[in-house]
Image (cartoon, rainbow, N blue to C red; front, side, top):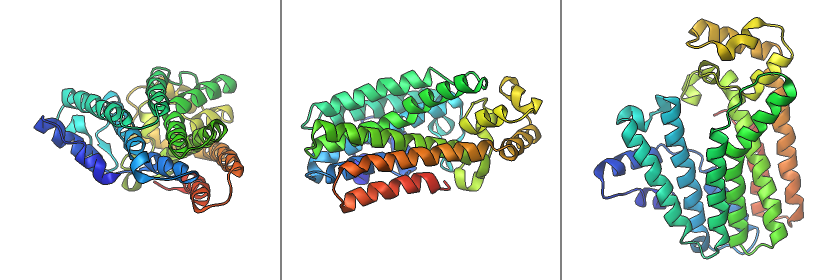
Length: 305
């Protein structure tokens, strides 16, 4: 799959080829491709049959990251300079579009037309999520609803589509496909919540971005939501409306979020979704693929990068 991604990133435009290859070579965990392959292994697995769906999942993910970095004006991704920083915003926009186009070409090669539906629905969902940011840090119920909708669209939907596609290409029944979709969705929630937790507990060396980056950008995530609900600190209540936060203010806010249990409560939610994801796998007979999917839930919960 990795070889296929690099090969298919070559375009007639030298700039798109260079920028696209730069982005693909940044690597990543390739979880979405892995989910396609492992889901298919729960049924009747043939690499050639599932390859288009695996590459589609990664092209969609990579394209969305290029556009995200452009919108957020992020300088680095995974300790690697972003496309718009190395080239310019126009190139980043075109590279993201090109990668989405590559994803469309890949999914068209799948011999099950449902794969196209799974992934095109997901692209629409990702965009809808990006256009529905979390705007309220309180009251708790509204903030949680907004947050779960956002990460469900932004992250969990692609995990779900990857699992659906793999199960469909593995010959699974409609019930099997639905169950794997639920597993993928819950796994995606775990992955994103932990990602948001790491923004408070990680460091720039491991994350490729400084701790508190979400706070600095005014992005409301689950640790902050829970912290506000359990803290009387005016800093946390006002931080979303404070542009151009100093490094000292960000560090103070990070410490307060951790102190009042925001990180702990968010991580507990992630653990709950991880248990729910694994429970979906009970439908399938024990196998190396099922074991790997179980371990992926543990990895998503316990990862440090």
